[in-house]
Amino acid sequence: MILTPAIPFVSSLDEAEELIWLEALSQAMPDESILPLRKLTENERKLSEVAIVANPDPADLQTLPNLVWVHSVWAGVEKLLQQPVASHYSIVRLIDPELSRVMAEAVLAWTLFLHRDMPAYARQQTKAVWQPLPYVAASDRSVGILGLGELGRRAAQALSEQGFKVQGWSRTEKRMEQVQCLFGEEGLEQILKQSDILVCLLPLTTTTEGLLAGDNLAKIKPGAQLINFARGKIVDEDMLLYELNTGRIKHAVLDVFVYEPLPRSHPFWTHPNITVLPHISAPTTVQSASKIVAQNIRNYRHLSVLPDTVDTLLGY
Image (cartoon, rainbow, N blue to C red; front, side):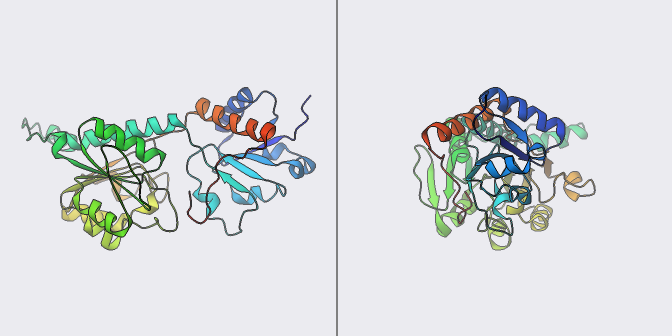
């Protein structure tokens, strides 16, 4: 018999995706009843203290008046933070070592893609041109990581192990072996001006939205290449196009955009110096995430321990 209140699963997923999550979460928490929000009665909604969410409409969570906290199955929670009405609950984002590993894998793969001039060789192939390009050693290539959270630190470590000169930037001072850690406005300017390949892994907050625009985008080292695996709103898309068209930025690998899916008419699709990816750099692993969510909920149920929550002012 289930003695605890049902846990609502609140998402913007389609029913097929929702079912995958419900099955995985229920398997990881056989002692809990996990139901789509629409199936909870009004009384069950009043009893709910915790909800599991996947990019939900914040208005749906307002129908759960006694929520203590919500657990996101994704790392990004900006939609919850940007709602017009202040939340009455704490927010826990997913911190999953598997997610960090997958992101580091993607950062390394696409950094190597740029480092070894794959876009240039692809263009040569369309013209049947057989022309080796000069090789640059990894130790002579500077890679900058914007954001040294869980994802950024793992990615920086993977790049360092491959021999790249790695710099990392964060809002506050951090320390890492084999990585030059920069912070603050002065550190941001330094990493923009020195990086041959710049990788954005920042969370979307009020301070990072539009960070790579205006003067900052213009400070990027001439001929540098950009990878954005963070959020689309961090980069000014129009100014990026300008910098690519003038040749100041050599190539951009973009996995995130202001509007997703990227509209078919968007100029990014056909730009010769842009690689478009469909938001696949670090997909959440359902089974791994479900186990983490389950353990956090068990700790709350049995030990009254709440996981680390998002600082709503900082945005992470």
